[in-house]
Length: 188
Image (cartoon, rainbow, N blue to C red; front, top):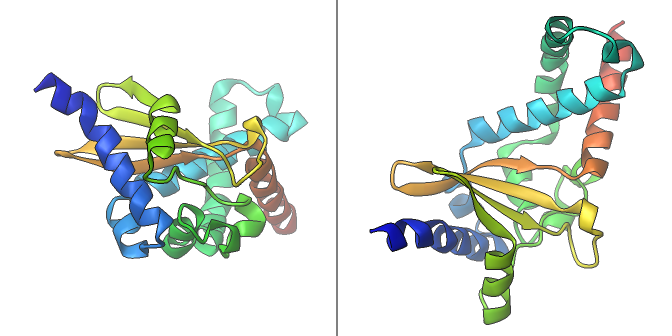
């Protein structure tokens, strides 16, 4: 039983990678918790935006939270515009580099292939970070720098592992924070 639990996310992520590598958008989306994924993007964007604003650095945590909640309305618009389910599927599929959101999200995720080397790469770059949470670090396209890795966070939903978050590389977060700043500045 314990071995089955330990092996299940590796098998699930391998199936996810197979679907993504052949561009099976419907299957990728079926293995994705879009609501949790979009909330994860929103948190990352707001955190990056607030970290770059000198005036928010000196605020106490409650005031930062208020500023963050105001920014969230703008972030929701960015997510609705640039991070559609199809753009998310394209980001993590074989078409990642040609995704509509490519300008903001970078090159796209390169998931390991289903050969022996790919399975070993998946195993070496992944692991549990909680009882029901499993993380896979993947490069952003061929030849991408180490700091440009995406981290795909899978969570257990019933008896199935689903993609719940994608931790974006710093360059993508900077672009999204710039987009948020531009929208906030236009509204001011």
